[in-house]
Picture 1 (spheres, rainbow, N blue to C red):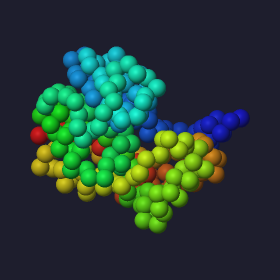
Picture 2 (picture 1 turned 90 degrees about the vertical axis):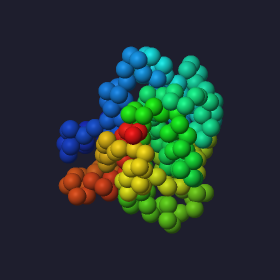
Picture 3 (picture 1 turned 90 degrees about the horizontal axis):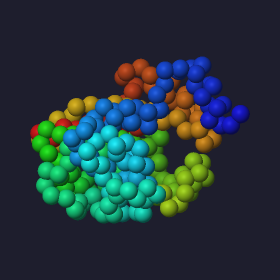
Picture 4 (picture 1 turned 135 degrees about the horizontal axis):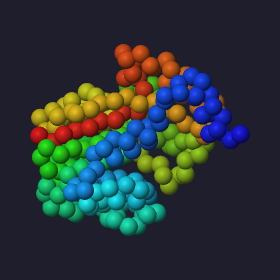
Length: 228
């Protein structure tokens, strides 16, 4: 029995209705796509999301500064300087991207320019209210955090980028209310199968934070913004 099978067996005992963050995100994305939409996935990484779901909409484009695994419908570029005309996109998605924004206002201004009024941005990111995010940010330098990610979660060095967490709490998103209406804020648990002991810690935290007043301490944040 591998780690995933072992973890899923335990999860079924304690919370059989649990949905992983990528399941919740993908369900929302599928609901948001449509035949006539222009969808821009910013920080597309390997461009796998566009490759998987691009057929559900008229135009789907991934953009990032790294070389993708899936090159179809991909543009190499900087989110601060998007190579599109104003009002180009009907939907913008950012999946584990905004935590890397060193100056969020510059990025938000560019997203405002690209997004049509009345349309939305879907953001999945880390939640700075979670001790799993807050404590490493405060006490660990980037070099140590990088080594821990490589050691514990088996992340490759090329996939690790500096994190700033400048736009990673409900309060920070609410400060955008002059430009955006907050359509949805959801706190999500992250359960990782890489290490059994880490899975157990995260499962325990998920169960502890089940009461609504403790949800805000979960590790991930899903936000939907609608441009005014």
